Image 1 (cartoon, rainbow, N blue to C red):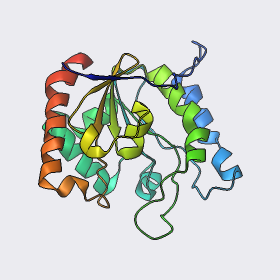
Image 2 (cartoon, rainbow, N blue to C red):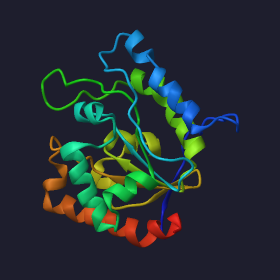
Image 3 (cartoon, rainbow, N blue to C red):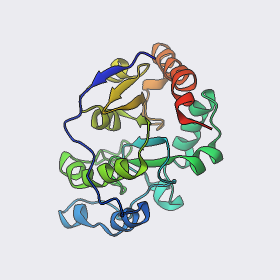
Image 4 (tube, helix red, strand yellow):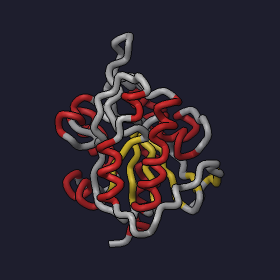
Length: 217
């Protein structure tokens, strides 16, 4: 497998080995740092899956339907995401049971002020939530990371790549393989363009042929 190597200036959090994912989950659900800082979030972290596990999926932030369902990538974005992952041989129920799903920021950030989809979490919010993402990486111990959407790609690769530069390639970061994917939200028109569909299909082929064998049985 040919993977592009990149460095990541933020290493995973060095957590005490006795800490469990359940303890971290309690911390994330109880967190009100962004709310206390004045951001109009809906508190209540959204994430799912076991730890450790060889694959971890990271999105941008939960949406309003994720808050209602209390699970990542619900409703239309989830259907589209798992339609894509189906090309690589994954089935939704099995995927959700086997692998860990989270986001760069854990709480719903609210609607975009101009009414176009959800608000992108600010740099300050991302920084406040970063220790949780590092804690998840330390406890989940994934070999493969699926970075879904521009913010997740930028965060996990620690570089600002355009989607057309990232999707269709595998990157190696700190001994892990990162596969960028576009965001499945209906607000994103990027996956609808034929040339981008080709990039997406190439990414899913890499997932099926090169990365799935790393996951074990």
